[in-house]
Length: 202
Image (tube, rainbow, N blue to C red; front, side):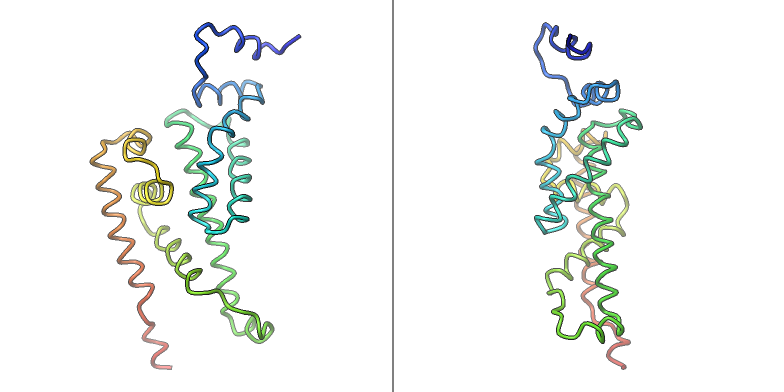
């Protein structure tokens, strides 16, 4: 005998697919197949986000898995205040930010004299990697509204309309947040690239 949840879905007369929030409700109610459908719908976007933020395919694949594991575990806490996709995207952004922060900690350790003396001949990360870390650090200094808008649009490629709908604000507000966020990022990155006066005096 088929499970009740599957019988119920088979008897739908309109044949329209369940939306994301309904699928999550079904999953929380015990239908594990519902989460598989959610993964199939969103894994490409989450992988694209991870790849844009981490710039490494292997890291992005691992991050994608961990992001869905986090969503799996937190499904019961989803309140429905936003679309499931927005909630999942925020989990993804936070996870990638943490990954970049851990990567930065490793870089700081490698910059220490102790590491230099014990790892002679090991190549240092290139300027591109350093720039990514500067960007991650600058993004972390933006307000949540600015950071989410910039990351979702510039890194995630999400249209203004979708960002506005997920945030519950007008499109004009989204465009303003992105514009202001970009300007703040530019200033922060310029500060990061400026030479350290203390080093000149050394």
